[in-house]
Structures are given as C-alpha cells and as structure tokens.
Amino acid sequence: FVVSNSIPGKKLLGDWRFPPIFFVAGFLFEVVLCKLRINNINFYDVYKRKQAHEFVVKKHQLDDYLKTVALQASPKPSTTPSV
Picture 1 (cartoon, helix red, strand yellow):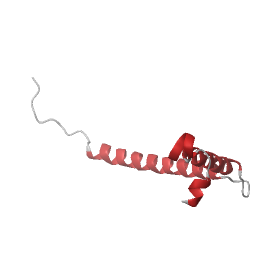
Picture 2 (cartoon, one colour):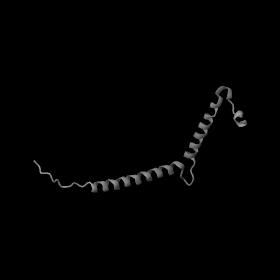
Picture 3 (spheres, one colour):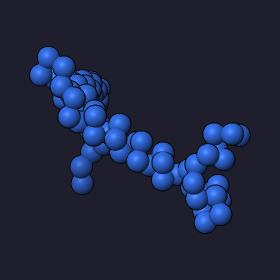
Picture 4 (cartoon, one colour):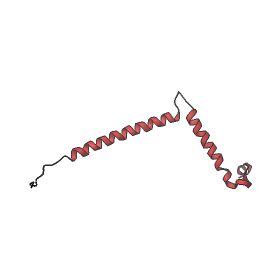
C-alpha cells in the first residue's frame, strides 16, 4: 500500500496509473528477449526452431493418417448389375 502511494498520478489517473508501468515493463522484457544473445542464440531463434519442428511432426502425422485412411477406403467391386 505504501509503494502504490509513492507512484505519481493518483489524482489524475487513480488506479489506472499502473497499466502503463506494466506495459513499459513488458515492452522492455520483449526487447531484451529479442536483443540478448547467448552463444549467438536468442529466445526467438529457439521459439522458431521449436515451431518448425512441431509443424514437421504434425505434417508427418497427417501424412501417415491420410495413408492409412486411403488404404482402408480402397474401392470394392460393385455387385449391382448396371443397366
């Protein structure tokens, strides 16, 4: 409670003086994630690599599923006489 009273803008914004602080903090966190490189790798390189891997795995699963569906749905000879 004491900390919240020390932040200016209470008369002008009331309790709405806090969201800009969190917005700026989130922005700075994102900038750090983009710019900080450890062993020449940053957060977004790792994220993109994981997304690409998940995409490839799902594509292979879909291809395998479609192959099994195609094998199960092979055409059967018609027993009805044609007119």
